[in-house]
Image 1 (tube, rainbow over the protein chains, first blue to last red):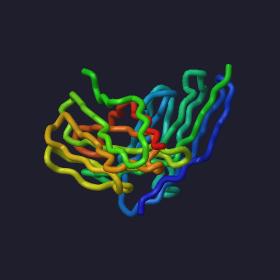
Image 2: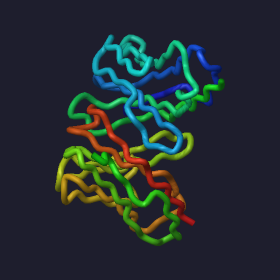
Image 3: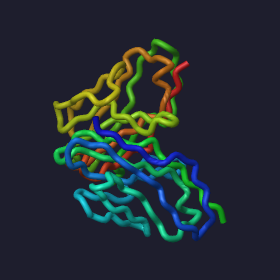
Image 4: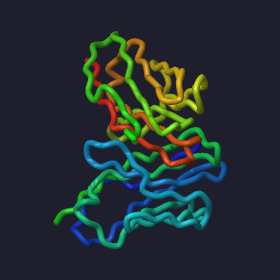
Length: 113
Length: 113
């Protein structure tokens, strides 16, 4: 079945450091790919998404590119802030209508001043 | 708009008790779903609904029931609580399916003793 593998945390970075969180997937079709973020004590919220190969999703300085040849969707940010401290989840869904999201286990990020 | 609301925020049950977790959305979304979040496991889909009167099972449906009598509400029932159901439960909604942006509620933290 479809699955998502993301790097284990926790990841600790200093403010203004470069961030990469790796995500690879296994899917039989052509899934849509997502990064969701969970701030402490809150529900998840969509950070960015990409629906087809070579698409780049971006939001709040974060970027991820849908790489079909390497089945990857790595999350990057050039300069992290303390406010980026959260848990980040990579997820995939089957093509529309897509009734289920498959989540990775999550990567905890702590950014220190 | 209140978005997705969940009640209660916290609940403690004894083994064998039953209860209902409430979820409501005011965005006129057709698709609603329930996930459980366990440490090191990411989020796993319990049940989902593509519209009023239509529900289906996700990855981990055993021990849970759902119904969807209105577009707004999607309650999750625990029939006979077990310690293995100790978890954080999230309800989510979207316009049409998992490929659309999911809007998550704040979660219910359930402990079964």
